[in-house]
Image (cartoon, rainbow, N blue to C red; front, side, top):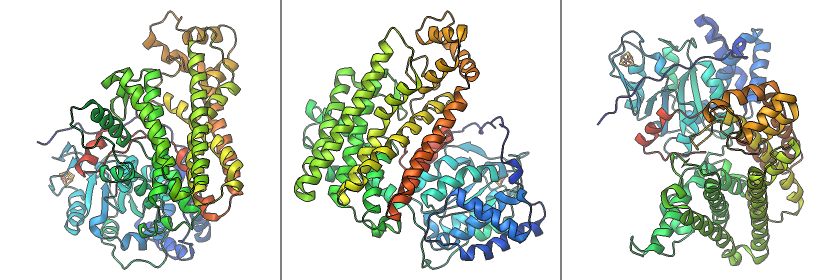
Length: 596
Ligand code: SF4
């Protein structure tokens, strides 16, 4: 049955600081000229290296300078260069492995008879706009086609393994947001910019779109590096068959009603749920980077033994255990869009599932001692135990602070808790991959420091997201202060406010404020703004990002250094909220949903 859905509501627009750089030339002649310049210019780009937004911007600026064109065309020039960078790659990918993403704003706004269903805009091909023509041509060739704003899900669709390249049509604003993620992950992608960004009855150079859809050549000699193969390998480990092979179930043959089998099923089901698999990805990618980086060149280049995969799996097992316990301690209701385990099965059973996953995590590494050597196994186990202890310390400190009578906190103490709570997982994941590739001695200190800066910056970003109503997957936003968490934002506010304002904030944190609970958030936001909390926190994110990058600068070999840059950029990404309306589209393509 087709579900009729509401058309997406247009969001109110914030001032756009880069608007002056994103003019699409209104004359066709100028558009063609920039494309032609980009074609020539891109001939000399080194395609064996990964490209990021900063590098692309430099190229765009250089192209405009060389061609004597105005900076207002920077966005258009960047898209044109990016298209040339990826053209050969996209051309060599089979049509049925490509996704065509079209924006729904292309439709004829006055009379489009199409409804929105679980697939996005269900074009009826009335012929009143180009959507029908693009869709028909692409589908005839074998493309999968979505008519929707798809920026946040592009990476997820690619990682799911069902498509290998994107041909997109979008406005420069959307492309600007998408470009960094897509370039960083090394996803082959070409795009045609809409001629305007006004979100209604837009248009595009039709012939350009048809040309992009029809690109087809033999595989190029030089392939840009990509982390997609490693991401997929990380995801694949949690598919039922792979998981059963890597971590065989003890009670697999038991009856469904047997409590031992039930318990094991709950634990494995939880392990397979959601998540970006970013921690196991780090282990696999670090191992790959230090053994030649062949996994970034092709799927066939991946040389990941079961031992390496089991070490990566153990990192996720610990992570999942910590989430179960976290959810109990915070009494969170939802995780990955589902009820949390303790809400489903009760606190006792959930605690036990967490304990089971910790045991499983240790065993996945200890049982590999014959394959990887007792010393390597012991070193990794030691790092895992260390991470486990630090995480418990950080969480313990937070819980005790929450129950304390005096809830004052300073920024230094808040960051100490952050370093303990978030950094050890990065550290253990990175260390495991490095140690499996050989001696980790020369990377020991680097791994600790890099993970600390990355973890602290990540946690501060998370706090900021909590105020942006983008609380990843708990389905509750802006609640940290009301829940009495010792966040850095609170610490900065308490340090920045004086007199009555400070007293009022403390009263809120202590649950002693006379206003109703749900009315307090706007007041907290006012107080935070008054203390410049958000700006200070943003500066700290940038400070710690710079520190992590400075450490990366010194790392050899290149493959490992590039991975560290990639981790900084992706872990400290500022994702747009995933539109809930996109979720059914993933299901429709039989793609697993990948949550944060
Ligand atoms: S062609 Fe499709 S999208 Fe365009 S107006 Fe007709 S039904 Fe709507």
